[in-house]
Length: 304
Image (cartoon, rainbow, N blue to C red; front, side, top):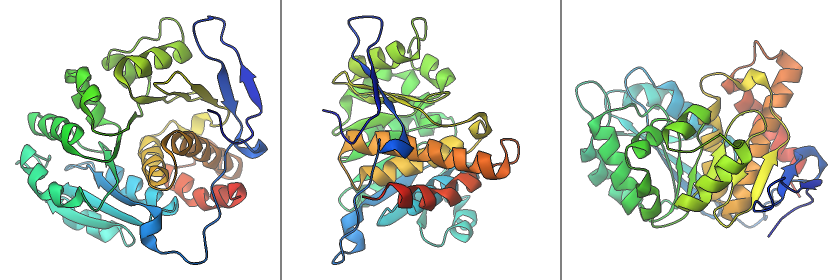
């Protein structure tokens, strides 16, 4: 199944691999539907973001702001109680709430209980931005993967937690998307020995998860075997926080459209917004917040 008007399909050299679909956002490769006149916020997804720790308040906030800019109907942001007041000040549209944390300001497994009340109201979970690494965050990540009933996006320190027991990816109740850069991918047990495309393809098939391998020409591998390359993006996006923005865009679109289309569209939109920033501000001076501010422009361009 391919969607939209994708301008190039290139067969991989290895006959066992599928053709690589090269996605150009500005050539009709991705689109989002026009919103109906008679509609309400519940029609556009309810998203739960869990992350943050002392010293890492920016990551969950960037993720939440990106989700709001990507059309999510409601965005809940669960953060350690130690940083809740900071996140509350930074967010007007998203709804931060405090969760139990340890003395160092990282979430603990005790956060699972208060998070359960969001299971029924939220169809998507984004887990990991700024989460930090500890026994508590590892236990919470494992529990949420096993118990959350909706779609899940894993990034940053949630991927570190998964790297301790990669087989846990197979235990998710619904579709799961991982968004590693190359270092995180290798830590998860992935291989780049035969190229990024093959590595992502093999990992997605092995663990049954959509694998977004970030970097120059981000690769998206579907466990059914489909493979995409995003033909956009630039070195100015190689800054802390850019991945948190992608997580927010991805999670927001997962609440509004079919999973595979949502992931490919999110990656293309994120890269396109980065290219607009580079053209307007330059690769040195552009920031992840600048990327968020350009998201509306890209979404307007690709609205059907």
